[in-house]
Image 1 (tube, rainbow, N blue to C red):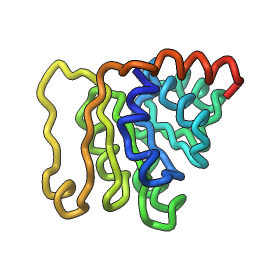
Image 2: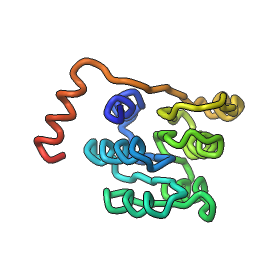
Image 3: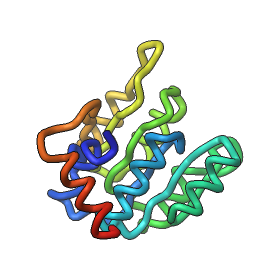
Length: 157
């Protein structure tokens, strides 16, 4: 699922250098690992659980932020010359997480939504339109992705 989500983002087309992962549960942490394997220079992970923040840090996140106390969007902008992350992955299934992922990407950046929601979220259409941002959904996998993951694991990436 994480491998497929990264494939669905604009990582290959835009030569993404900075990524934002909102939610560090199993899916978000897997996305972090895939981003690191793909050579993304800077990965910011956002998580409320201290245990999950520690795990994200140990798995190679560039920065790990607590959205209750840290200015996530301000920090991401400061790290990217005020542009925002190239890509974001919404893995939290909470409205505040979706808002953070969308606000944290640059103009023409891509937010990929992986989380499944118990209720219908709202998306700021003005932010999407005025920033020409891309919103992508990702839920499954494609042929060849299992083999690609095995190869990445085998090669140590």
